[in-house]
Image (cartoon, rainbow, N blue to C red; front, side, top):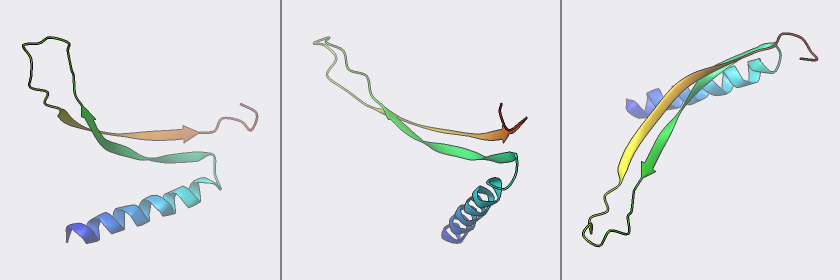
Length: 68
């Protein structure tokens, strides 16, 4: 079920991307993952664990004029 939802969302995003070329309005969603770790030269700190984070958001491209 999860795989079907993922495939449907990918298909919808591709369709929106194709339609965006024809008009002055484009919108969509962005998201991803991030892995960060911090290391110090401190000799007492010998555990270097990373953190996993996620981000998501939306965007809109609104054309005002052809030359702007």
